[in-house]
Image (tube, rainbow, N blue to C red):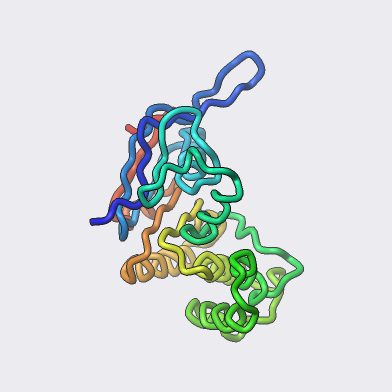
Length: 222
């Protein structure tokens, strides 16, 4: 199986006044293509830090991060942005949709940064929103959608550049249990199509639906 993401001896330190906070310390993780991984742990355990490192949103203080065999620690910000745009789709707890853009426009946005032609952007975004059951909400603003519908838009947006990896930070955190189950069903179906899914959650019942669980405590893997 193809090794997609590897963290080798990764540490992330932050300076807070006179103190050094060890947000992540000695992390060794290997994620293969097609994995469905849940990262769990209490608040302050380093879950979001590790997710940011895995998603190339942040660089390590020590150690190496490999994405598809490439050591990203030595890349510039523009190269990192290109890799993120092509290989990784992000889903956030707060949805992070742009309130002044319609569902369709929100899903089209990542394709704009990858210089996809407008006609193709519109078609792909429409197809993705139909795929997540929102074909009748294409021209609605986020404020006109329910929490579950906004998360579906966020999922469609994460898929817009057909990334290999979907990174989801507390994807059910702002949803009721019924809607959360629907979102998890979508993740399982995406995983069956070959997408690699890495999900941060504090909910162990949600985590159990993944194939692999990484448990963090005090910035280290338990």
